Image 1 (spheres, rainbow, N blue to C red):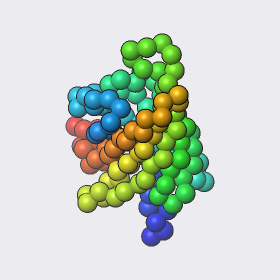
Image 2 (cartoon, rainbow, N blue to C red):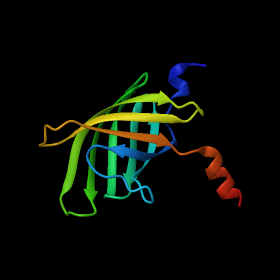
Image 3 (cartoon, one colour):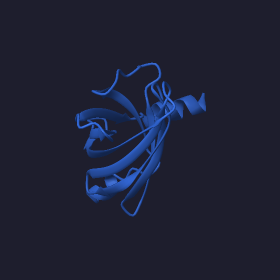
Length: 128
């Protein structure tokens, strides 16, 4: 199987499991929905601290370069930044994204980790 095809992110959903920028609420973590076509990545996110967010960028092999902007639940001004992520495979076949990012206007490097939603659990819930 083509490695790039195996890691295609189109339609995949991820949940944040850790971040150096904020505490992750395990009951309401930030969730990301990815779309991909011809190496272009885009999508949306929301969750514990984010009211609404959007991102766009590119993927080359297992490296993702994104620009993002979001509104936090605690403030009226948009937050923007850039990130570089690497795609890793988890032992159960799901994907993990390890993201290094910086907020615009802040030179502090940050790291977050997101894991793909388990497809089997979603399917079981939908069938219930």
